[in-house]
Image (cartoon, rainbow, N blue to C red; front, side, top):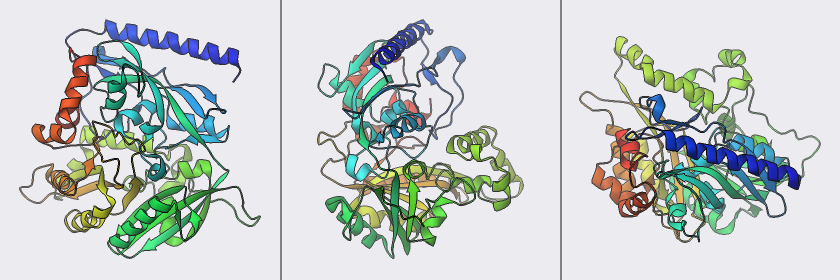
Length: 464
């Protein structure tokens, strides 16, 4: 991008940011404000806000500039990772951490903790952010960095879910890429040996003599778990063709079927999006006949999420189950982190008491030794993110939330943490103990003293 074009683009952003601030100021007093955007990756469903309380940010979704020399990008807060990845790959670059789903936004990954298979090397997605322009709850536009006068806001935004302010623009670090990612799917017969291998890979950055650039895992059962180890490469034999899992073939099934694989870097980054990991099966998209009829452009996570939202809103599947005499189900859609050494303990209880499969594993260690106050993981520890997304039958007399609350207690007992993008059932006192209430309230008082934005507990637990 030429200097003149870059300056014009940034000037247009400044005008858009000023307009956003002006429109925020004109929203009626006395009501809490919600973000108005076309997509969401949250699984906290609630009634729509009144139109007057919605702040439209749909225009703030551009990649403003990419600097190949410094390996940085300047992007607006509503820019999706899909759009950013297209722009960076054209320059043989990518973000340090690219969350799994295409419509996760840059601001959303900061506010809600993005993670992926490079997180064992680079931490959480927000740890590559160098500075953020934030529209705060009190209507100010401020630029926050780790060491300026808004450092407390910079550190508190991760896991704040838009309750302190909205990220309008970010400057982030990038890393160089190669054309392909070569994969190894390594099987383990028990969770303990899998956890040991994760610790080894995190220590050495390699496994059995080969470097590892990406590491995640899939658990199909107590006796069948795989680590998928990826490494960048430009070397491909003439007889090897990269795999394509956007058509009839389904990525997660390939993990059990083959020991090695090859994908373009773009396809690797979005390998989970086509089938929403494995959750598209609940919507019929993995049925071979229906899959042929399902347009390829609609095989993506945001489409599936909208279908689930419609089902939740109108309780369609619940009505069908009730009429068929089938016991009600509780959605159990969570990502939790436990220390690597406690992974086997977590999975043993999870298999016995919850029983959802497959389960996703993603090793992570914070990149910043200072840590992040609203999600207080120990920077000296390695963790494994465990993701599980399904529903579990409720026995007679069990209220909704029974299984989720059991998982919350188990994670706490194992010195872990739970992400807040989905339903949470913590009592208020326990919630603030786990998510650093004193720090949150101190920052909230500075940047949203009148409470124009929701309180974190009200938003994430009470669903307000």
